[in-house]
Image (cartoon, rainbow, N blue to C red; front, side, top):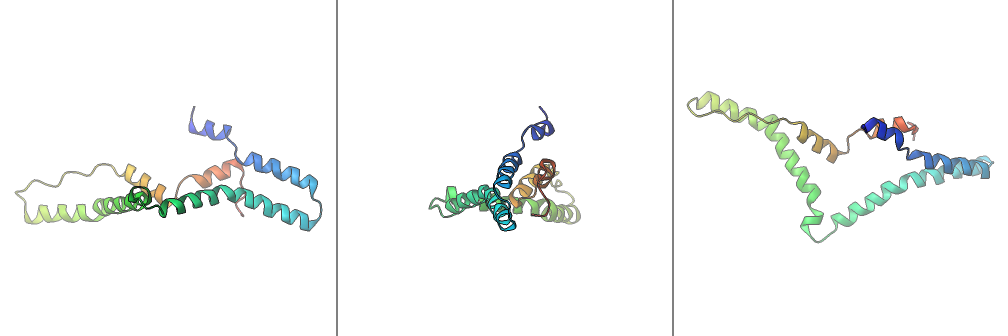
Length: 140
């Protein structure tokens, strides 16, 4: 099963649309429709608020193993990124220019995995594409 067919099969926004249709039938005035929109927004934000609460609990944990994994991964990614794009070239240039008899610095491995982890930490991904596919309004 491909990722695209999986995305077609799963439509998490359908339940919110169904709730919205039921609320449309119940409320008719403009004030009631506005309050319905507020209720729907709160429902859609609840999963993000739950994850935020989990993150706060993890960050406040006494164990460095629990509280420190995100900063650790962030620092490792930052150091690896600095090595790939700054220090590797500088050391390679210094070794080639001033120490030609020494072996050169080994070649870099691919950076795809590093960039994937870094973008995941930064929260940049295909979520907006998924939202567009499932019909989430762009003006929210």
